[in-house]
Image (cartoon, rainbow, N blue to C red; front, side, top):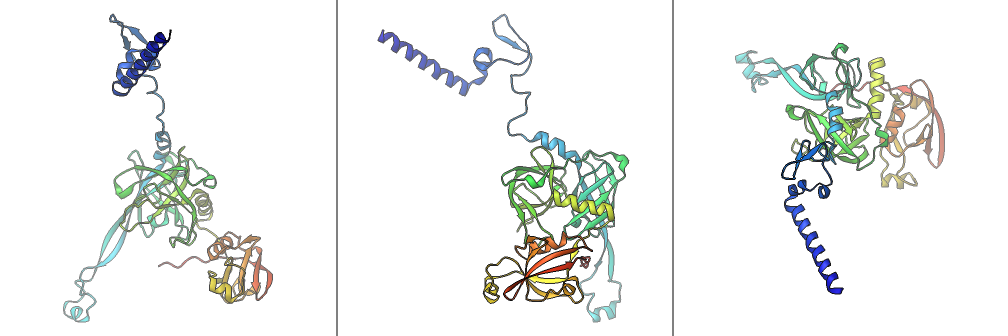
Length: 395
């Protein structure tokens, strides 16, 4: 009995080993064994030789591939457009033009001439009325803007409004062109590690989709925009991607691709996108009134360093030091003085000078808000009538 059992065990072991080898090296042989290959999809009949005649593909080939984001790309790509801009620029025709001796002998014949400069970027169709959201720096200074859809159609576009401080702009093309519209996602629910796709027109090569993950959230203090709250991603973003869509794994837009960190001009795996929550807020104000209105009180602030903590006898670096107050500004009228430390705005704590700027900008001009400051050794509450933030000067 024992010998019989050993023979059986050896036979089973050899059969399993042979099956493993066949499945690894010649898996197509198993197509002739329905019971081993897990069955065949579609219809099949036995041939005279006893082998199945396959009419359809093996099971599983007609289902979505694991790890593929083709459906997300298919959903979002048609709503991302290419933006081509041009502007007239005066350039000097001769390097010696500023030399007075040269000008004396040759006059202005080597003077300035007008040339047209072109640029490219991307944009996202956000409404059936032909509204397109993009970056301000994509269309800055342009006197002609052309939009090209994913299917090759081209349209002239005009600027509805822009906001240089958040680097956003809204364009409009005639609504009768009926371009596909992007679906908005929720950037507030994003997590570090979520899969994202960046869609745009890098280097003008054509519509391109790159993938990556959310590397970080709430990036600021980068010096890119006045108001910063970037999504950081390692999805490849290159020149020409600006203004394109950053979408989630379902094809919903969660950001506007804006900038890259690069020492070579190409992607180094650090890209930044404006969250769709901020983009929608700015876009709503632009569409409604042509510009963005923000709160302002007229102070100059600086970060609180460990040395300032010691000098002002503070408990931590939390807050923002008031370094200057503009005369007759809302802050001046409310009694805020240089040397005060701003602790909270409208009940929200001030972590640093950047947070203070964001909190004040979010307040509605013409309304009063409670500010909490530290002056000397005491905490001082003040009510401030919020003013309207002036437009930044053009460079």
